[in-house]
Amino acid sequence: MAAVVAKAQACLVAARGRVEQREADCQTGGLPGARRVGLNRPLGRSLAPAAALKRAPRRSGAARCSAAPQAPSAAAEVSEREGASGKGFGVFRLTYDLKEEESARRKWSKTIRVAVSGAAGMISNHFLFKLASGEVFGPNQPVAINMLGSERSKEALEGVAMELEDSLFPLLREVTISIDARDAFKDVDWALLIGAKPRGPGMERADLLDINGQIFAEQGRTLNDVANPNVKVIVVGNPCNTNALICLKNAPKLNPKNFHALTKLDENRAKCQLALKAGVFYDKISNMTIWGNHSTTMVPDFVNARILGFPATDVIRDRKWLEEQFTPQVQTRGGALIKKWGRSSAASTAVSLVDAIRALTTPTAPGDWFSSGVYTKGNTYGIDDDLIFSLPCRSKTEDELLAEKKCVSHLIGLENGYCDLPEGDTMLPGEQ
Image (cartoon, rainbow, N blue to C red; front, side, top):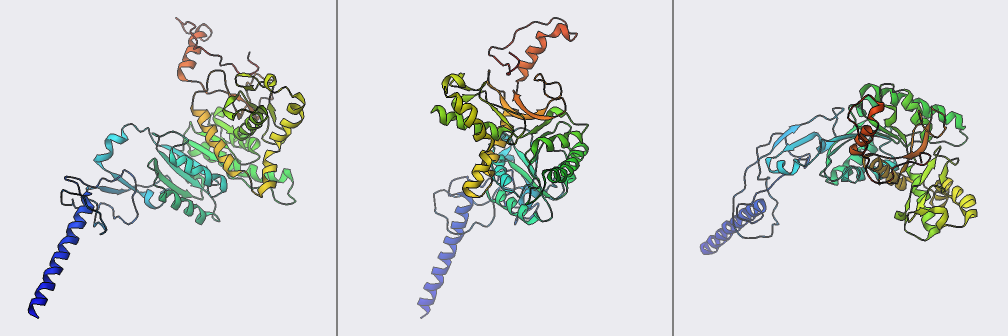
């Protein structure tokens, strides 16, 4: 009997030793000199700030780890970081600064802070994950997201933030939730105004304009007071042209050229219809302009559009289709979509918002342009000077602007100027 007990005790000791060794292997990955390296982003809410973490023992050889590791092996300094509103959500309240990641972070740009109103809505739900993934500003551009909602949508905002947490986006450095625009707009570089009151049954258009006008007037005043002076504003909430104008007029300290109403979705829809009719892929459509308001009165410009580099009217000879079907198809596309499946075009709107931001931050290809609702003061098209009106736009490089400046140096009081413009036609329609 004593022999049996002794044998059992020996087995328990051996088993305990194997478990301890497997835990050590989990810490090191089973590799000589290996150690766990953390990310310079929050990894979980359960870690205590400034926790002292022990280095795991080293051991050669590979092993499959079924026992849970006790603690990360790399020492990390964990500190509380307050967000823009002092209410950074969940893991985004914590910053992990590890020397192991410094070399990877050197190529990153300064964090861009983006405010999104209506952040619990469907458009935002599609857009926020594109923003956090790097699809909007690029793979080396970290972002901080300030989500703005209402008291009623606060729990929904927390749900969105939880999903952003669980997605482990390395470029997403901070998420804050706010129902106060002053908190959400503090020091933001971009303000994406998606939220707006929808038109309800029996509501007159004038009533809707007044209700939303009050919302966007207040948001304009708040941006004027607390946002980055160079903030870029894109209004998505409808009627977006008029809402953008109201916002602009209530932000006198901000540059009017930085206010936009989203008409990129209309441009995308127009490109799709031309591509279908011409039998080509949509990337072969260029120079598509949406003129006017984001409504059924917009004018998609097939006259200046190009297909495979040729005028659209030379490729599509069916003039009756262009004049009588193409325009109303683009104008009423949103309504047709709702009839098909009972929902608004939230996903394609989110995609077009990504496209709009990329168009504003990326030099436009020579000879091409894009559409955006912009402030019309000083326009060359004979349009009233005090509107937000969709026009053809180009994003120019600094080199191109400097070259143009040198070319007109004699007109602006500069000496030793010369004209050496980059190759390629960069003129907009109406300037030729």
